Structures are given as C-alpha cells and as structure tokens.
Length: 184
Image (tube, rainbow, N blue to C red; front, side, top):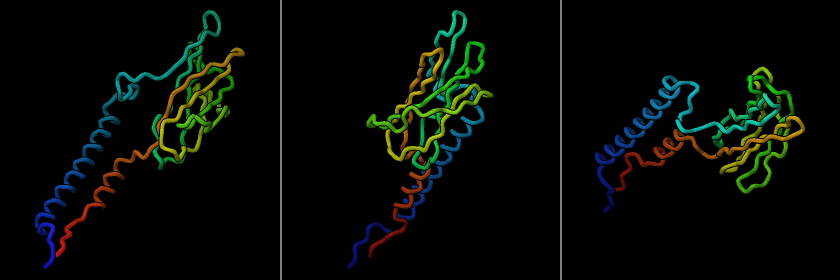
C-alpha cells in the first residue's frame, strides 16, 4: 500500500495558485517600473527625502566649488561593471579642471581601490571611474577626492552589492515547487 500526499486535483489547484501569485508579482513589478519610468519627474528621486551628497567649498571670496555624486548605489552579482560619477563645478555650473581620485573600501574596510585616478569629462562637468563590481556581498564605502587650490576636497557615500534579482528569485522558487507529484 502506497502513501499518498494529496490527490492530483489538490496539487493542480496549488500549482495554479503559485503560478497566479507569481504572475501577479510580475505584473506588480512591471507596474511599479512603468510608473517610475514614465510618470515620475525625471529630476526627482524615487524616495522624496533622499538627497544627493554634496560638499561646497570656498574657492575665492565670490566663488564656490560644488561636488556631488551622480552615480548608482546598488549593484548585483550579475553586474560586471560599475561606475562612479561625480559632478564638480563652480557656482556658475562650469566644470573645474583638476585631478580627482577614488578610494573604495570593502565591507571589512580593506582597500578595493586606493587613490585611483578618475577620468575627466568636461562636456558634462563630470569625473568618472569604471570599475569591476566586487563579487563580495555587502556595503562598500567610496570616497572621491579632488584637488582644488592645493587642497583636497572629498565626498563619500556607500554602495551595496548583492543578489538583488527579484525575477530570478521568483523563478527559482517556482522551479523548486513540485508540480503534480503524487506518491502511491
């Protein structure tokens, strides 16, 4: 005599419910993405109280320099390349021609990159650096240093590396489900 873990009809209903939940989740994610791409103002962050880190320093009595991050803070293990972009400009919005460097610390605070020169991009008043996304999960500290009038100004923030592929997680969960299995 075999052991039965439920009849075939119950398993079919359970499978339809799981597939229905997965489809609704995908529709929800697509709706949020569509809303974010087409209906939110392009210059507004998704989180209203989020502010871009920035530092303003005094150059001369009437001139200021402003540095701010304009690059991402979230990477997944599937990403091969990351990029740091900072905007460096004076109070008229004009690019400041100087040297900028980046340091990135691993989650354990050891160096991932140390004082690495950034590439100037004067047409956008930016400095940028491409780097390979670390294959370590965690929060990484990054700091950009720019030399202005024989002084270093710096600005720091963090970025996260993790396995954040939601669709992959849903797909894996569905694959792990046993569809229509019956022991008898």
